[in-house]
Image (cartoon, rainbow, N blue to C red):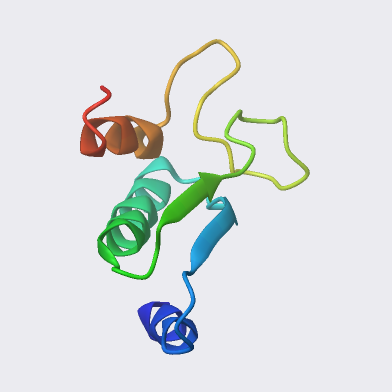
Length: 88
């Protein structure tokens, strides 16, 4: 994925990550992908913004993309993200 972002960035425009979600039902896999991808997005000099999409479990059109259960419990990927952003 970094290669694609680098290629778009080579055009001299900012690259915004929008409608970002991870459709994995396995909590550990979702967390691993979040750690890898979000860290890369966050640290890329051409990415000024990242927008999560549909973070409540069961409230989107795609299965397994939620990061927070309707009762407020966080999936591990969201807990990692909150810690990463110093909001945990």
